[in-house]
Length: 330
Image 1 (cartoon, rainbow, N blue to C red):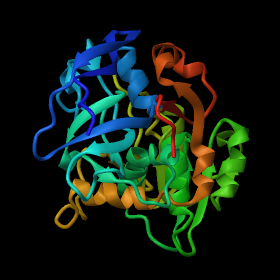
Image 2: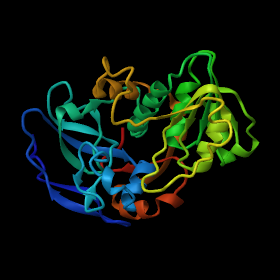
Image 3: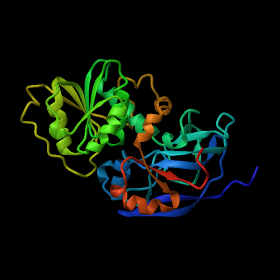
Image 4: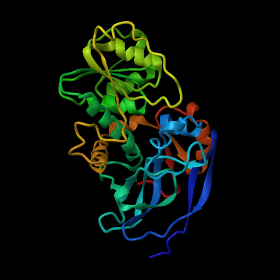
């Protein structure tokens, strides 16, 4: 066996708006650890851009920590949660296999075995970076009580909204519509088995369930307009330090709408007695076998170019940016 590496390179946000690749010591893996060589990682446009620009509210610093974060907000901080790599060293059931971890962007990492989930053989490496977002989408539908036959609207066609649409459209008999201000996302909605419209063309739809992911007050207003009598609106957006103005003087009270928050840090309450975080993540990975989900992958970025890409994240093409490391991706 070749000598184990003792150094790693990781992406750090040094201060708001300033990132760099930094060398750091790599601890020697102990019993119960896995040495992971990175193949790919995904960038969460919403949360990671918020962290990069220093937009995490101070009172939420403890809640916003990711599982293997180092440093503190607003920086220096190492943040991210969508790493796929090869387990070079570890227990026999993982050694030599591809694993997913909620770990920041880093070329090689020592991760506790419980933080590594095996990637199913039918899920390509780059698609596997969507696992954390698929887990979020699954939790959102659980929080909303999604069920077969419902009329469901998803407001916001980004990565999470797209994954929610994909899952909801597979509920038997469900009538699912994706709404987004960008009409080019219609093709993704239809490929997923859903209808599409822009918010300006949307008519009140008497929906049973509306899920909002656009992170705008206008989007949440649209979601309420689509909700039927006593329907649930799941607010899945993360606003950070941005205030939101919401018009509640129309049908909100007479229609007895309920706005329900959803956050992936805990399993949805109805499932929590039986589902661990690991079980939920394994289920999310198993749901990534469909090649149509590649429509949600965005630009490919070399790890060496990650600092520049993070600074230009808002101008990158749509989809989840995929960071590629030096080792070839199977």
